[in-house]
Amino acid sequence: MAAGVRGAARSGVGLLVVGLLLSLVAACGGGGGGGEESGRTAAARPLDLAFKHPGVLVSKEQLDAVRAHVRAREQPWLTAFEQMRDSKYAAADYRATPYAVVECPPDTRPGRGCVEEREDALAAYTQALLWNITGERAHAEKAVEIMDAWSKVITGHTEANAGLQTAWAASSWARAAEAVRYTYDGWSDGQLLRFERMLRNAYLPQVRNGSADFNGNWDLVMADATMGMAVFLDDHATFEKAVHHFRTRVPAYFYLRSDGKLPVSPEGSGIDTAAELKKYWFGQDTFADGLSQETCRNFKHASYSLAATSHMAETAHHQGVDLYGEVEDRLRAAFEFHAKYQLGAKAPKWLCGGTVQRDMGPDTEVGLNHLQGRRGLKMPATEKYTEQRRPEGTDDLFVAWETLTHAGNG
Image 1 (cartoon, rainbow, N blue to C red):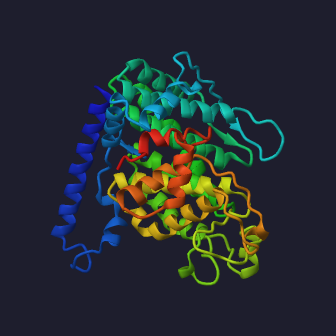
Image 2 (image 1 turned 60 degrees about the vertical axis):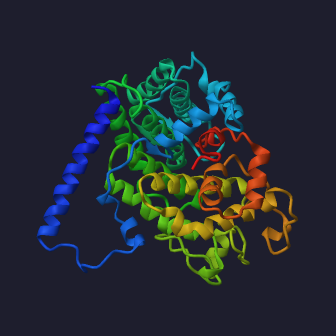
Image 3 (image 1 turned 135 degrees about the vertical axis):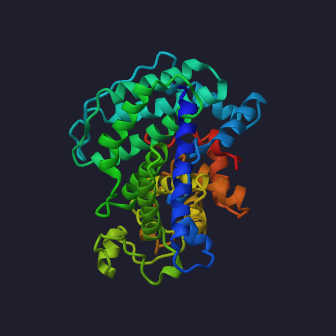
């Protein structure tokens, strides 16, 4: 049976089961208050929803739009496509290098499989996008070949950076798999089931519970990976887990004055006094709208978190859950704050002692597309920064080709 047909059939069964359960609840007088739920309450109940596929970061409608833009040779999509097509990840003879155990230490010791795993996952995603845009089956075959090579071998991740490494790779694996499974009929049942087992056994346990003890970019990227895998695996409980991480971690990572004099404490961390928060925020004790927990570390890590937050909100958006709406002001402020100083604005003395490390990555297209493109909110600094970087390519970690997939693509 074709992969897309399999997915549709499973979604149909899921809808039938959900419908029967809801009917039983209604018949028994369930539902509690009996009044209409608020939009926020409804958004908090994704178990009542059937997942939309493809729907991990990129929807079918977005893939269709990208294909049309590229075929019409329109900018910036054409240049972004050519950038992706000419990258090492798009090579026709690309070969995966799978490891049974990926070892990623936090120090100068050499790792085993860390770069290979991230690059192979990005290559699978790149080939999946090429298949959807060009219609050339060789790209879908290559994506499946890469994913199958890893699913035959890997058993887990070790060393102190295991959580972050797992999250980076899993984010790309989920996007690649989603973009192939529901558009291509050549992924065999055996290969697909093996890949699903790989995600459940070698990736999800490492990231599902997040990491309150580390900097916020860890927890947000781990939640991004968890949400992507949950949608691909049709795992509603895990999706809700990722939504919970979003709702508790994003407000603790990006500051708004409405939070009070101090930032929100990360759930489960025990970091809640002024002294502890100052240390956690890399010495910062003056807070302004949009400042992030890692701004005074460097903009690179703050940028990772902007990307991960946008990825989760975008995936949830495709699933009918409005996480964007819950953090709209906070996310917009964070993008504008960092873009302003990235573009060269002088840092005042109260901000990181007057010195900031301007090293943002290709992490703005998804958030800009929603906040300015869909919502019509003005984001002049973010827009200027993004246009200067276009086409935004890949960070070789977990962000790839987002000018192609999300520039002006609502």
